[in-house]
Image 1 (cartoon, rainbow, N blue to C red):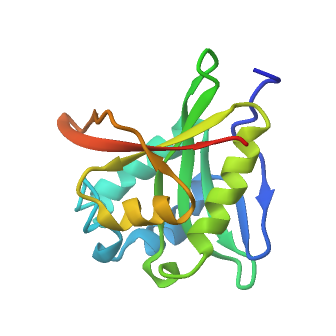
Image 2 (image 1 turned 135 degrees about the vertical axis):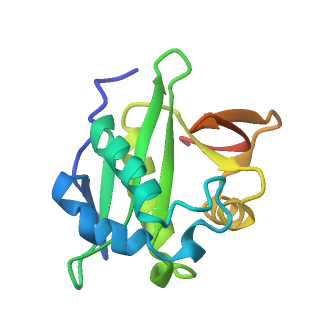
Length: 174
């Protein structure tokens, strides 16, 4: 590994700023996450509810590695993601817990956010991995759209005491 990884840098793209999450992002973040369509393919399909999203949000803030996505044109919060499981031996890190306001689906916003986060990670690691719920076709297509390659081995992640099977996609530094 080349240097210490900066978990919460501010990353700027042409349309999106990816910045460290803050406690006072709550109202706008919940508004971005409040559409059930955002979560209908996700393992935790009721994350659009205030009580469930509150746990997700508080965990993101406490993680020290979570981000808020801000549309630079209107200063609107449109989603979130975080880094997780830095493995110095394997020279890899996970990007996950990502969601995007449904109003921003279907364009290139997700690709812009992922590009910013992946390029930041590649300054320190050789591989970025993404765990995707094994029934989340929308996220699988999004991963393939940005060049993610599916690993053969499936993994299980436990969320709120429930086991969910996942497929893992990876991007390798060229």
